[in-house]
Image 1 (tube, each protein chain N blue to C red):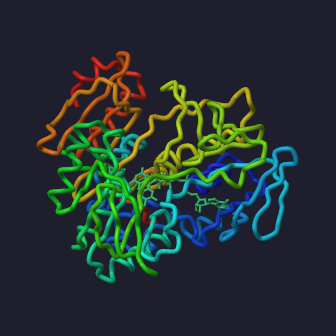
Image 2: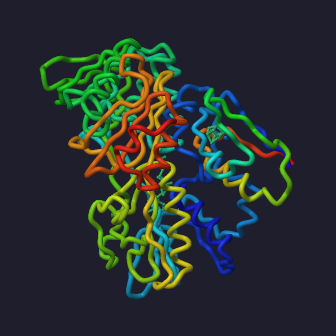
Image 3: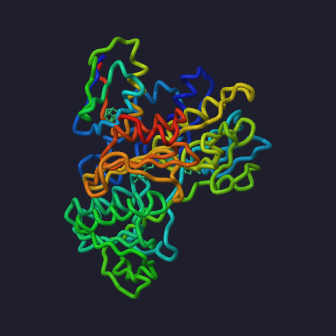
Length: 388
Length: 63
Ligand SMILES: Cc1cc2nc3c(=O)[nH]c(=O)nc-3n(C[C@H](O)[C@H](O)[C@H](O)COP(=O)(O)OP(=O)(O)OC[C@H]3O[C@@H](n4cnc5c(N)ncnc54)[C@H](O)[C@@H]3O)c2cc1C
Ligand code: SF4
């Protein structure tokens, strides 16, 4: 995602030399959000999610190497090595290797235990769902887990969702909104178990049951593990770059001279919020991809800091949840439109008198309008009384 | 160039309106209105940006 958008931005910025785009998946770049939604539900076929057309890709005149994995980089010699045995000396490197799903140790050989990150993952899981399993167990009630549960219910499957926190998503959305999310799942017929961990997932060749920390045992033919992601930085070990939960960059997305990073893999200080961020959202992959590409083409003196207001959405059942900005549990929090009971509302978050975040349920237009206010540095008091 | 919006996919989040307010408007009724369905070629770059930034892939260009 970030890689393709960066390559396009390099061409737009007038860069005419060779661009090598390396990706270890065999598919041309595609969009991930529909994987847990329209692809898994069966509504869309994979051709709907291409990020570009064959013509447009050809126009970019890339040296596109699909199915090839980068295995190393050396900052001193500026050489990138790949698993097809090649090594290339590069003038600039843009790192956009994204992230992968965390897994549960000891389940690698058990068929039917899945994660959802790639198109291949989605198609495998869709096949599992097509086979009409008796019960799907989703481990982790974060956004991906919640979307998988919602899509599975939409297909009429029985679903148990297991979450270690007492209230799902409470760390991101706060306690009250987390409670609403939990209620929605239960109303939709999900057997939601909170405040419990997974002790074991076992079976023969294929998964048969999940054992929870409270001793209960759930029979399952499919288990989907959605317990977060880790940035893909292993290939950069020993490169000379600083790696700490992502590729560490400066405020302009520069990791070292001539080396930039973007998307899920990049960690940088966002000066707007005065904090280090690594953002795992779709829109950030585009914006940071474009920003880092421009950074590669600019000099140190005219480089701009990357100061976005991050935002993302998640669609579950008929709910559209959106979050923009930076939300922390101790922020002041106020509902400005609608109510939790209606499941249609907007909540604003204030810190030190500033508007810093907004969460909306089924209020997409409002969220984007408040996002603009965060961008414009509007005070919390003014945001609370603004007419929208 | 013709702008086509799939209103089944559009969720009226007004991202396109932030990029091109003269072409797209989400009104108080929370529906998206395309103000000019056939803009000139000068607008192509901006419309393409809207296509790319629409998280729902609801916008496409014909011609
Ligand atoms: C199922 C799903 C649903 C999502 N839904 C939403 C949503 O509703 N809203 C939202 O805001 N965000 C959503 N996201 C998140 C969003 O898709 C990601 O933030 C975005 O894809 C990140 O883009 P990226 O370019 O950083 O990484 P990626 O899209 O992960 O791309 C990185 C690519 O690099 C490849 N790669 C990794 N290591 C190497 C290597 N060593 N050599 C070569 N290639 C390598 C990977 O295989 C991958 O193809 C979702 C993600 C998933 C998986
Ligand atoms: S950006 Fe897409 S979803 Fe948002 S209002 Fe425009 S067309 Fe609709």
